[in-house]
Length: 597
Image (cartoon, rainbow, N blue to C red; front, side, top):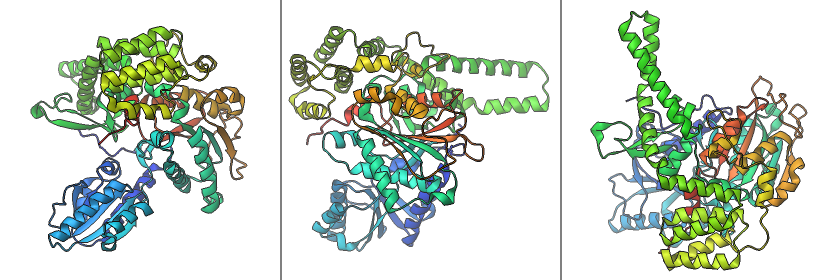
């Protein structure tokens, strides 16, 4: 079966992401080269997905590496040189210390190296000192601030940014985000226009300015910058979109099977590998897969038709092949088509499997309810529906997700309803969930209503609900949710087209401050006032680029909507997405769940 590479092909990227990835590869290889001979590389499990998108395991093997995952258990290996590659986290220091103590108790003489990703933290080294192992370690850093997921998507791989900021008041990830953007600028030149909306975004814009003062990117050596504008957007500004069910092909795969680091793990039989019944298989999902690139952003209703047409046309070609004499070049063309057969079979199987979920009555009823909540004109129906879900003990995450959508569109719930639903949730699901409900309240996602909701005003002003959306031939981004246009992407579209100024009134109705900054003197760059002019060209004829940064995560459906916008006539810009994490409504809701014990 033709294999799709886990490492995405970045050749068509509007930015030179390839050299960025190669730099990360070199830095890792240098760490390995610095330790001579055989070595055991012990990886923080959370980093293994990121590394799989940067470097192939076979390359690591060439440097005499034996791979292990870091855990609380003692380290089982005969090798005496140990390299730990870990995020700066308290509990991981405890794991490392306990492994070292275990080695010492067995009388093992080992050489230890600890590399922090992306940078060392004093608090972590303190733990190693308290555990009396710091003096045995060589300490270093592996500055991996971002991972290219695809030719137009970069992830900073920061979990739980929303919860850390909204609930714990922890702003440490904001420095990391600014550092990653600043690092991008060292490849592509200083970004002249910075637009930010939301508490975190405005802070990141400020940190970027400070970084440019402290470690300037020398813009004059690089000519016109490759990125014309960066738009920073807090997830908090639009919590409605991620709570709605995504209806694009890639979005639905994520909703039902969870895409992790650019691949989905499914039973081998689903992907058409009969001989491996019961075994799980990882299937990469990126633009190296031509058929996926063509279908990923379509509304799922359309995908099934596209696959059916392709299968039919291949059948017809085959019939023609066998019944007539073909020239060599016609045969060649047919063989080329046959090469895509495994890809097609895989997607037909995957789409068929998805259909078993999307055709369920419960899923259709959910979509209907989401739409009713977003329209925000039938409060009682929505309230009673959620109450019923709680009494039926539907999965908690699924209920909380709908409840967040309901609370956010209503700017909270009247005190009587808020107290009642909270009490019912604890009765139905157990009192241990009180910490989770407190987190959601602190984050403003499930709270008492203090003022009238302005959702209706925002919805109308930005035309978020679009009747009669044509999902097969869309002319608006609302096709990604079959009738709801993601608020986040409407904002981005305005920011690209005309900056924040013409929409100040709407921005004020949404959470958090906003800012707009011009940096550096770029006489040749397109004016910051209006960017939709066809003049958005870089010197060598490429379209200039807008980088959209989502702080707190982005969904696949939103990325699909941005790609759709970028492909429209009159849009003179390519769009690149950077995010702290790829999210869905479920994973975002789960991030607020307090794990007790």
